[in-house]
Image (cartoon, rainbow, N blue to C red):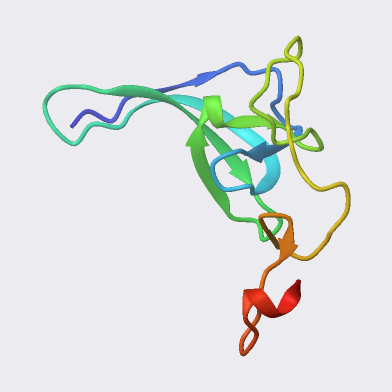
Length: 110
């Protein structure tokens, strides 16, 4: 395996970012194009190095980072949201009725 790598410019360097894969937030310290192969065939990938609050750095794919403070949404800016959900926190429902708990039957709740 060859030990090749090169630093890449990135618009979020030295800014607070979030790793979408793990949800971890920290400061983007570097983006490196790195040979990650363990065989004779080279496999290059761009890795983001993020320094978390503890001082340790984690790596993730550059495609997994976004500026911190933005929603974790997979929608594009021009797409309309079609999220269906509860407006406030309420008890889990089963077909419109509260779910039965331990020792309670669903028939007893009507």
